Image 1 (tube, rainbow, N blue to C red):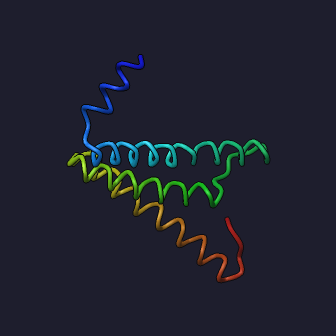
Image 2 (cartoon, helix red, strand yellow):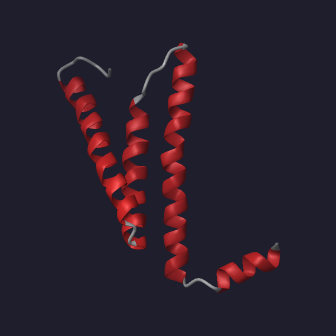
Length: 105
């Protein structure tokens, strides 16, 4: 196992290792949104989508889009770009509601 890890590190450039780290961090952020949603729903015993879900979605999506562009993966690029539109729109709704004194949905 140790030998495999050593070979992995040696076979990739520093830049590629940084991009792998970006991809892993991005996937972690993107996955954390489900944990946030699950915990929030369990607390109130009904399905809800808390504000933090949209922020994790947005920032994870931005990082995943950067990673997809780096990897030159058109399917991944299109999927993440579309998702960012949805996340941005939901964050805008939250800010508008707060500005109008309605509070979060």
